[in-house]
Every structure is written in C-alpha cells, then in structure tokens.
Length: 173
Image (cartoon, rainbow, N blue to C red; front, side):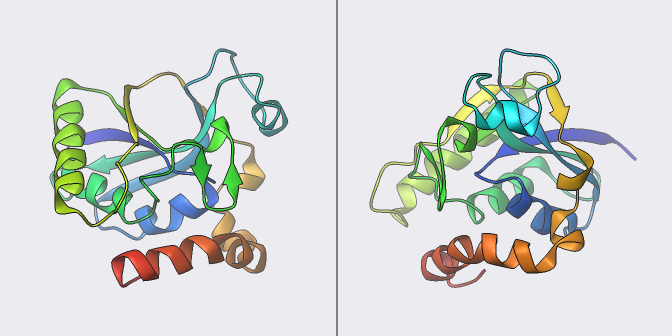
C-alpha cells in the first residue's frame, strides 16, 4: 500500500467528508483548518476571520486503489467552482474553495483538471478555485469529525443547498 495525502477546501467541511469517505481506497477523512497564520486554530477563531484559515478536509488514500486525479474529479462535483467567496450558504474567506497540493505532480493534475473543467463550458462563469501549496493542517474539534454520522438531521439541513445546486449542475447529488 502506498499512502498519499490530499487536502481540499470547498465550503463547510461537514459536506465534504461523506463523499470522500465512501470512495474505495480512502483510508481517512479528517475535517480541519489550513491556510492560516496561527497555530492550533479553533472553530471559533476561524469563524472570526482573524486567522486566515479555511475549513478543509485532509484525505489519506491508498494511491494503488484510487488516484489523486479521481479525488480531484470528485471534488469538482462537490463544489460551486465559480464562487471564490464561499460555498452555497457558507460565506467568507474561511469557506473559500481551494485545492491544496503536496507535490508538483498533484499541482499539475489539479491545474490540468481545472483547465479541462473550464474548457468543458459546464459553467457559464470562470472556474475560480485556487490551487495552492499545502500548509499545516489542524484537525477540527472532535464534534466536527464525521458530522454526517453523528448529527444526520442537522447535516441534512446544512447540505440541502449544496445538494440542490449539484443536482441541477451535474444531474446528480
């Protein structure tokens, strides 16, 4: 087994976990914070917009079972890649969409995938998801982990706008 890491930010991390966890080859998906200026940020400090962090998921995967390219493909179907200032009802810099890369190969895959999505004309607007080098990743508090399992009713309410958009845009959700 060969392990690799991917970090994606696409709005509220609660909605990013389940689709990745259900993909074969995924070893773990952790909700957390990255891209900011302080160590050990808390949910409250990130919400204050003073730390520069964005909510993200850290995915550890077996790259003999699933490729980084497949993870990037799934990422596009979970976000509105034309919205740089948040996702759906979640607004602000802490919800900005970003693909964080660990290696030059990941960077090249993400850039090519973004260019292909733009060229597909699936979206009427420019694809604005940032592609940035990975920064320290800080796991979120325990109550954020696996939120779709521990709080299914609240998760469903939170995920509805995303679900509706994805169904309209991709014909699925």
